[in-house]
Amino acid sequence: MLILGVETSCDETAAAVVEDGKRILSDVIASQIAIHSPYGGVVPELASRKHVEAVLPVMDRALTEAGVSAEQLDAIAVTQGPGLVGALLVGIGAAKAMAYALGKPLIAVSHLEGHMHAAFLGQDPPAEPFICLVVSGGHTALYRVDPDGESHFMGSTRDDAAGEAFDKVAKLLGLGYPGGVEIDRLAVKGDPTAILFPRAFKERDSLEFSFSGLKTSVANYVRAHGLPGDAQGVSGAYRLEDLVASFQEAVVDVLVTKTVKAAQMSGATDVAVVGGVAANSRLRHRLMEATAREGLTLHLPPLRFCTDNAVMIAAAGFTSWKRSGFCPNPLDLDARSRWIAKAYS
Ligand code: KG4
Ligand code: ZN
Image (cartoon, protein in one colour):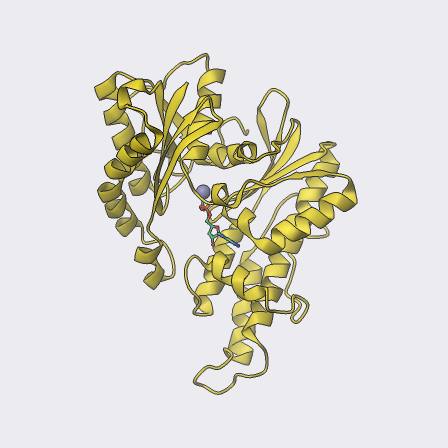
């Protein structure tokens, strides 16, 4: 089964051709990072306009690189949500038009299910039941994935997502966008124990997260001590590298603790961590240590499948299409910008 995946939920226009949910024939991404970078975050209107410009060329390139004609496709899978509504509508419109013109089935995919499918794109896919932490710019949530493939929600953030905290802290420190990448790079040279930032709910049995208080603590620290090297001259009391390493450690500490707790509570021994923040080097390192210590088996997607891509959408599309008995979605489907639960609740 040849599926063209289309992803435009945020700031990447992506298309990919994947065979049987596994064999990657092409993987094309047009990134908008340079466009949003001066603003320190994604500007929704700019994102939509750039998707409009990029979506057809990106879909064309995905077909060309795969050596597949549009007629050879078995179906077109597209991200229906969650995400920025204007951005989602561009991909959905393009996918619908193609499905209609070619008379091919359209498959609506949850962006979160897409991220979860990235766990199956590595050399060593997880075996159900497994715990999946989805940790990205928009989500921080734990699921238990059962042998029947159903995902069950276990807990999520009450406020900011972990990636959002990375991006907001980076913005307040005047670092580039996306903030997680910059902080990861700088933190390697810092001392993660230099400043003790709060770890919300860490000791509780609940699987909830909260990162907005941590972000405020960093803002208060900077207000009290100044930025290193800033013009006000209150600087010099600490190193930027130590600040970001300490912030990152607080995020990572909670993510690792809650993921291990979820595994212990559910009895699952396989653990997968997916989404943009799963690319974080410190998180990957701490997860490896903690899972080895606790007798758990860790599955991390290859780095390029952590952040948004269309391979994961085509792969998730194949699974959900198969599970539905190859039933297509109607061509009048709409974007679901706040869609968090599909099989999850
Ligand atoms: O999955 P993704 O591409 O988009 C969403 O669905 O949100 O994730 C983007 C998020 C951003 O917040 C970005 O700062 C974060 O993932 N991110 C990272 C790293 N690479 C990307 N956060 C921490 N460390 C990284 N290396
Ligand atoms: Zn994403």
